[in-house]
Length: 269
Image 1 (cartoon, rainbow, N blue to C red):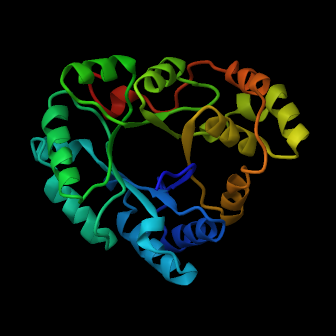
Image 2: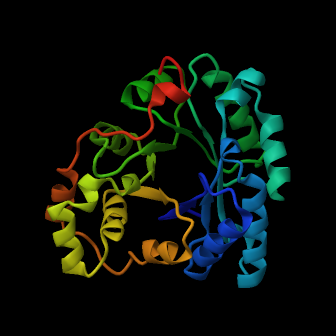
């Protein structure tokens, strides 16, 4: 299963709130979800997914579950992260993950961690593996070490379009997932004449236009919300496409603005 959009669970630590948005996603046909140990949502997300699979009669193969290996696990296990992955599967009552990401590519532990994940992939405990929070220079360094991810997950939005990363990934057949895809509706996006004009043309809101921009630039947005109605709105983006000119105009909003500082999560990054 290759999702076109994913519901994230960062900062959604109340089970009922999480169940409500997962249910809204299932109802609208979105069955792709992202978590991480540091989010504290693995157990609740597993319960919510199981509940909705039963309610909507959805098989496991139709659900996409994305989890991560956090930095402390890489350090504590000296790269052997198998016990943490098996523990996460147990928490979520799953037999496998559709993808597991290296959350932060700590240079001292990336090679043994990647080897551990490749072993888990060989044993079909993990279907796919990827790396988060990388730039071209990290991808080039990893390639020199024989680490060739097919997926990356980066902070990307119209204020940070990551064109160098997008070009590199296109050239190397790497799929890009975008977290914080609407940049928490930064005022420069909310008040953008460009986005307001395009939203008016398609009778959409600005968030929907931005999420469509991700899809039309070959990225998979991972959005978050605690509001079921917002989830429904964010999924109502498959009845229109942006023109090439509109994509260029939205991309022109780029400021290389970043919400999350990499050096905070990955010292020396």
